[in-house]
Amino acid sequence: GAGVSQSPSNKVTEKGKDVELRCDPISGHTALYWYRQSLGQGLEFLIYFQGNSAPDKSGLPSDRFSAERTGGSVSTLTIQRTQQEDSAVYLCASSLALYRANEKLFFGSGTQLSVL
Amino acid sequence: GESVGLHLPTLSVQEGDNSIINCAYSNSASDYFIWYKQESGKGPQFIIDIRSNMDKRQGQRVTVLLNKTVKHLSLQIAATQPGDSAVYFCAETGGATNKLIFGTGTLLAVQP
Image (cartoon, each protein chain N blue to C red):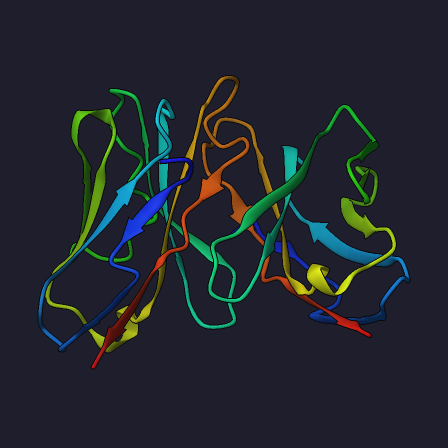
């Protein structure tokens, strides 16, 4: 596709359930980021993938959060045993990383996660 | 930790006027800055970027100014239009980190 695609666009789940959020980056983009955005707030860095390098997981808030990127393309963010404070918009972004990975990030529209 | 902050959380302007959105950053090692626009229900959209070896960069109707002495960044929008209404974020990065640090955002409201 022409842009970063995220699915689902909305997810409502019950507390304690696991959820998986998917991100399809722009074709050819080697860097992929996950951010979290709470209502009316800025973007909180979660995790970063670049090529075959080990991901930077330093932003993951707890061990209930994990992410993987298969084949250097599609990424899945998994939240286990969801809590109400996990409710937020989860944004994925990718970049061509010609110079640095964090330049000119292109964002998807996000997944709105609501934990009841 | 390091942070990027905005002076004005909400900015209201008349259609056709120029808008100036300000941003302060605290990491003197930051050498790359980006402005993003986020409309309701959408992800942030890249507007313009600037490296620390520049003081000014112009795009279409937008100009970014960087003052490294006082660690200040601004976004100027010429002839503001209703379609410019959105939340604007500045973001910074520098050194060895691959992270972009985002500010909390400024809501720009364009009055007809």
